[in-house]
Length: 257
Image (cartoon, rainbow, N blue to C red):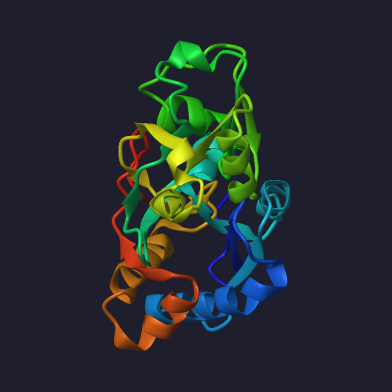
């Protein structure tokens, strides 16, 4: 698709499947972020809008809009949908309390799963369960999964871990924050981390289908990389649990425009 005209309004779609928060709760914060980023990039006032959606399907619908030009998504979403949406990474998020990369942890009942083959007939529950292309080849790349393993999305991680501890045929794939909280659970002794992924990005801000002209994309990238260092942007970033942005380091993708 041709790039948006310089005078057009581009929309940045924030999509965070599986994580808490409604669209109405987050909208004021993504609006503030869009205004700050556009100003820092030297874009015309009002030329960057933002929309938030907490669901995979809702986010995909918004990304299909005529004015959608940029996406800010978890890495799992990027892996699952990046090729189809022609997402080109512009910046990599530095998330407060996590960093720019994280490891995902597979948790099973203590004394149970010790090999990939033992997962035959099991279901993997995860906030990233909507993205099997992330779960299998990325998060669990070191463990070739049996063909009958099911992957399901859930935002009820505590309930999922209770099912694991109870001995149901389920395991849980946790992000770094969730895994760090495991020792605090009253039933933690009944759980065991059996595999940890290599470090992967936490979240990516990308250009959608080349809809932002290259020069404008470069100015936005420069602004994003500076945002974490500018005191005036600290509150804007903090509202979205961001410390800033770094150059994207995403395996298998082209350099940003």
